[in-house]
Length: 278
Image 1 (cartoon, one colour):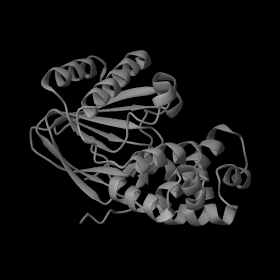
Image 2 (cartoon, rainbow, N blue to C red):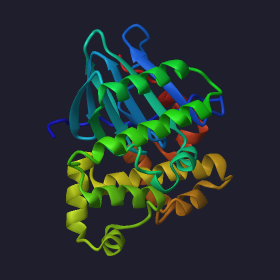
Image 3 (cartoon, rainbow, N blue to C red):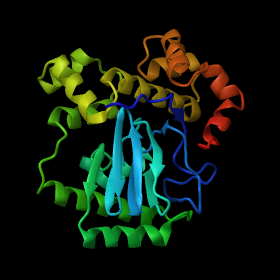
Image 4 (spheres, one colour):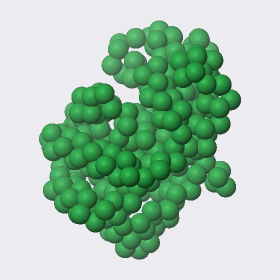
C-alpha cells in the first residue's frame, strides 16, 4: 500500500446526453483518453487485451497484463498510472439499476475489487464480444449480455480459487451500496462481527477506509437525488444519509474541493467530467 492517492474527481462512466445505461470504452495510446484518478456511481470492469498496465486503486497499486480482468465497484477511485506502449484495454460500465436488473440477486458481485487472470478461451470470448460493441450507442442489451457473461466466468473461476477478499468485505460492500447511511455499529450488528474487524478487512481488501467509502457512497446518492429527485440541497442531503446539510457541505469540500452549490450551479462539474490526464 505505498501509493498516496491524489484527490479523486467525480466523473460519470456513461457518455453524457445519450441516455445510455451501459457502454464499452477502449483505451490505447493511439486512441488516448486517459482519465485522472476518479470515481463514479457505475460499477466498471476493465479487460486488458494487449500489453500491460499499472492501476492505482485506492491506496493499492495493481499491475495487470493481457488476459486479466479487473473490477471496480461504485465509488472505488481508480486511475491508470502507467502502461506499456502496446497496451489495449476495454472498460465496461453499467448504470447501477440496469446492472441490478441483469444480475438480480448477485447485483453487487460483478465489480468487486477483483484481479483475475482469465482462461484463454474465456478471454477470447469476452474480447470478441467487447470488440463488437465498443464505443457504440444503443447497444445496452449487448453490453448486458457481456456483463452477465463476465460475471458468470468470474464465478466459474473463483469457485476454483481461494479468494483473497474476506467475506466481511464482500458483505459490507453490498450493504453499503444499498444503505450507505449505516454506521459501523449498525453494520457490525447485521454482520455479527466487531466494528474493528469490518474496518480492518475492508481497508485491506478495497484500499480505502470504510469511513471514506461510506462517505463517498452518500455523496453519490446526494448527487443522484439532486439530479433526478427534484429535491433541494438540504432535503437531498438528509435523504442521502447525511446528518445535516453542513455535514454534506464538509464532505464536498473534502472529496471534491468545492461546495455543493458551486458544483451544481457552475461549469465546475462539466470541467471535472471533461478532465483528462496529461
